[in-house]
Length: 421
Ligand SMILES: Nc1ncnc2c1ncn2[C@@H]1O[C@H](COP(=O)(O)OP(=O)(O)O)[C@@H](O)[C@H]1O
Ligand SMILES: [Mg+2]
Image (cartoon, rainbow, N blue to C red; front, side):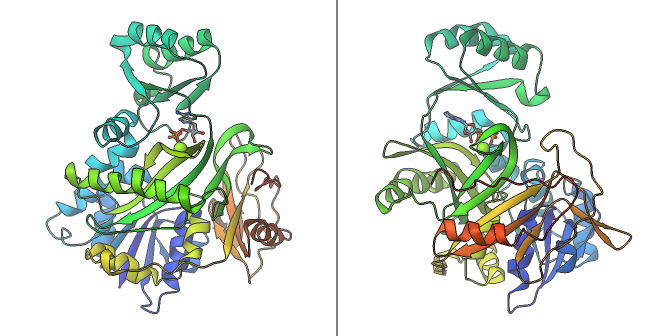
């Protein structure tokens, strides 16, 4: 079986790691991949949002199944493109079609979906340049802090949480009238602030059946104590200690079930991963956002805890047999620590040699490549170290331990993950 994985991060390396362990011995192709995925399959130097190039690669390498890692190809319609292709139309794609990908590609679409299906989330209103005056007036009617969200994809930078009314008005004007986030902020969602602690829930659905993966919590800020700029993610742990059984039951009843029912009612035929960003307020769960793919770095703690054969799990999804599948989840906790280039998430240098990667540890590559036979950095998030333990603190100790000998110029990682748990 030939599997094409789209993407190039730690998430995709983790998928390769799990798929490569399958007794079905699949042949893996990764577009474009990184130095880690190159050890488990064949990297293809193509842009995963170049749909023609993806189709060509599928033909050339006789691909049987496509797994889409990041959101951009999904929002660009890669699934629709393949489904409509004259010779590739029968090949399953794990990842939703363009319409359903709007759950991530448009905050307003996601909020309307939640409203329509009575899924708990913060109250909201949406505005465009034409309704800027109403947006400014609306801000005056709601309490601080103000949550302003660019509607479209903004690489994790499109959400502003502002404490002062005057500053919130200025930001709304910047977003709508001056297109602060380009096309992404032609529409802005203003929503009520929810005060609580966040966690992430992952569901794999085939359009009728589903499995719920282990829950995870990620760390987004660059600085210790959750301070400083937002990043793609600096680490993650699974399970989540405050996700007690009673709370988890509420997530199933109030959020997962109505979300999957909503997909059916709206005829979205959603096949793929749903990432539900949740917040616990008191004893109740609310949805912060949907993503239509696995999270990174959450994948690096979630997939290693799943003991099922990953090829079989994805085949069951493609063949709409997920109802027959029972997930086997390891009782061990997992933690992952992300090592980044100095300066990230702002400007940083690339091409720094990486040394000291242990052979016997779970080190997933993200921004890595090879140059003259040397392993070098090629991105902001460079690699992640996943460890296991009887609880998340033990797992963190193991993940940190496996990083000790790894080095590259400017290497930085947070040393306080789990501090809040
Ligand atoms: N209504 C809200 N109340 C409180 N915090 C929020 C709210 N919406 C978003 N946030 C915070 O902002 C972060 C980013 O928002 P999110 O909707 O996940 O956007 P994205 O991941 O696309 O940047 C969230 O992880 C959360 O910390
Ligand atoms: Mg988010």
